[in-house]
Image (cartoon, rainbow, N blue to C red):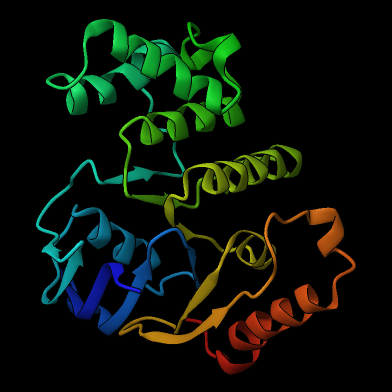
Length: 262
């Protein structure tokens, strides 16, 4: 199976007031089509730095990142990002926020009517059709994140990059959005890279979990396959010994192998 994304011997250094800081040190791994790969590790282990490199928002100090065998040199519509902060423009409606992305990517490929239908389709996909004409101030935190996901999906990305998109939400809203992401991934076979601090979220959503060592000079510590059948039910997994064994393996890495957290 050919990887969609290849990260090859990537290091990232930053110049700070106290000198040079090595965030990532010689990181290499592949991401395959249709999989959900979670990145997990202690704060400061370079997860967001790595996601910014995958998004093309920054360039590595050394090494290379490839998407479909082309070097990632900047942002592109084949890699859509959903941040923890929804990043919606407050003066625009949900429909108009999604529309900005659609117009940017498809203005030369779709008619105005086709774009309108595509915008509505993606808002319906995340159960936001009833609120498509509301502005962000009129939406809950979970609804804003749904619009952010709709905006990303509307670009028809090959890879969806999620930077702790559920971290600021209450437990019930978080669970609903996790279920939505699993449903959408199954429907579209989208490749997903998810940054999370939540062990249960990583096991529930992922096909593989990439565990980072502590920073500075963070590296790939271990990659754990999550061999649980899909579709997945959080209720069924609560009593599944395989789920608990996988969860324990991640916890063992985070809290027993990684004893020193700066």
